[in-house]
Image (cartoon, helix red, strand yellow):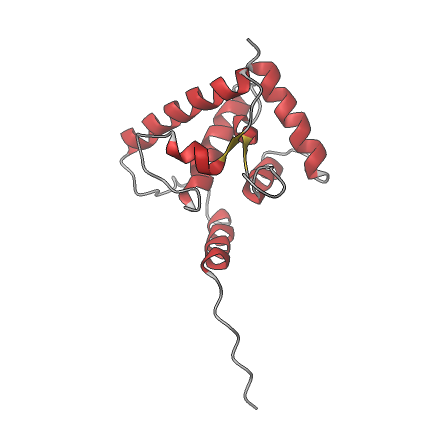
Amino acid sequence: MWRKAQPCQSYAAVLKLNLQVDMLRDTTKPYNHGFPKDEWEAAKVEAKTLLAEYAKRRQMIPYSEFVTKIHSIKIDYHDPRLFHFLGEIAVEESAAGRGMLTAIVVHKHGDMQPGPGFFELAQKLGQDTSDIVKFWIEEVKRVFAAWKK
């Protein structure tokens, strides 16, 4: 018996699936983002500085605006590597006791919250994300407090 062909997945759905598969990879090995290491690290310094300034002003920044302000690397807000870029920053800042600094990088429209990758990473870091809105609000408060003027 023949099965009816399924429609092709959208580009966004394929990216999401690739991201989910990538999240299951061995995290003990460095992520191959395709950028020279010095440029990647310089971009992280740029991003941390930028996000710290936004946190000091108690402001959020949309993904689409965030990527335009990073000049050491060129990365689009739909690029799956952005998840890893923000993830590294979140892990480093959380380990430094300043909360997940990337909590203030949000969708421009709709829920105006971070994407699902933020919450998945938080869960991997041992955070209780059973109520994502509550967790996110608390994390934003933690970030703002850490960067208080």
